Image (cartoon, rainbow, N blue to C red):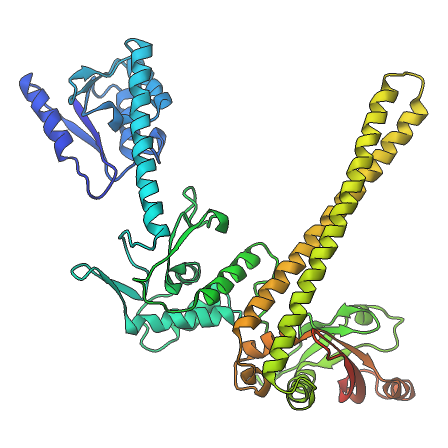
Length: 533
């Protein structure tokens, strides 16, 4: 004779179940020789095959190691009626008797209808309890009431005072985490940076960083239904979250800042924005274009080391079509440090000191205004495409009706073929326009992301004068410029033709034209003396 027991939560234990079983076997002078106990295991969340000790019990029953099982009640074995049917059939096939010590009845096949009703009630009671608990939690969360549990990193909970407070020695890491993420660093890079910080006694991982970034608790909000139950590392869609502002939580960052970081995470996940877009080591990546080829210049690290170990650093922007086309006379290949120096110290300072917006505050407002206008244009474009799709859908429906009509007549193969071709062409047009809408939606979401970041980033002076990080400068460039086009000046082309044999393969100084396309009215042209192959 063996015993099987199960309990779900930390607040429960197995003592009462064992007491009931031992009282029963004592009456009949029997002895329990082995106990199979699934601790902290929910029969609702885990199927019978995913419960370790129940699976072990079934294996031993199959091998004939016992013929009687004592269980407190049938809900300890399962909550699902289908699982009850399966277990009863299984134990019956292996000649194992299951005794329920609580109600002192047999767990057997018996009469099907009463057993199904009993099993159904077990599941109904379980579901009802779960729903009541969930509704209670939801009510408390929406009303900002703390429901207990472990507080996030950087906080502590005083049980006596029932008060949530900040740990000063820890919360600095939280603030730094959000700051670095807003600057464009990924989870792994942030973890590496935090591990280098002084007074750090933790082993930071990208999962730890992620848990901070996605948690609205730091902005004063409680949350529920955030993580996917089937996969703990997966996050549910934001529309399924339940949030509630709590006056009991000390706020670390504003809700707007947290919203921006969460939005950035979601867009990286959907690949709307590249994970390294805001933190590229190349300030002008995806901004610098070849004017003639109309493609972005590609950054290349061409640094080399001599036999003595001396490093010769050389990073360049190149135009792939120029480089790969042997018929092209002039090939764009620009030194990274040179072009970035001009953009940072010449163009951006020009914006600050000489543009008609007067000061960064006005320019900031103008960028927001421009982005808002861009979003409106995207919406109009999407609306127009939807109207076009609706038009094609109507045409497609008419053609399908015509095809049905023709198919009822057997002598119109040529007409039927033409209609089928027209239907396929219409379907392709519908698909193409839907793809266009998807692309515009991605652009719109990216614009919203940049706009959200820029709205929060009031201090432009750090970016303009180089007091901030390189990531800050990268973000400022993305905010201000749609693209910067590069082409050789006519004087440089003439010089190239004159000296092409003498200077082939060597670096010579030439003049480039830079055409600035700003998100606001910055479109102009500059002449820069920089190096080119």
